Length: 231
Image (tube, rainbow, N blue to C red; front, side, top):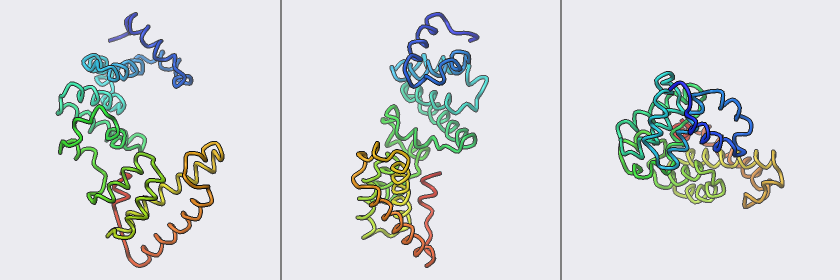
């Protein structure tokens, strides 16, 4: 495919009319492969999975390491119930993204509802798994992944009473607390309503968590769960 059809151009113009493309609209229209990826993403959202695969083929033929295109292909193959191709594309997307940007596509993959029917599939779970096996810790880390920071802290306080790996709990809590403090520092009152407590509460909690972690590590405690979760 060397150029878009007139129908695809019209479709692309409609997609690019939304504010999210304000800064990239011209660049996308000048780049054929970028345009094809935007069209493919729209096809996936509409359940037109075969069309998405067809649109992505020339992109990946030229740039097999394009992690966004591989991810979109994985989404389309999931909709088509082509598991082997889905896993291959998602594996490439995750590996290429990590190498190119440091981002971990496993979190994006796990959160996309197009893969919901594979949630219990052992091969899919192996691909995206970076969560602890312990149910308490898994709930905490899933809440962290979902940016539900107050839930992370509530679950963490409960887990600290019984958890064998206190460092894993504390690391997740500290991550959540740091994020909240940083958000409130940057946006102040604008985002204050997103959280259950004022900034001072989270700042004091962060001091406590740093102290608790330092004490455990000084006593020789170690944990790799947080590092594994973050990839």
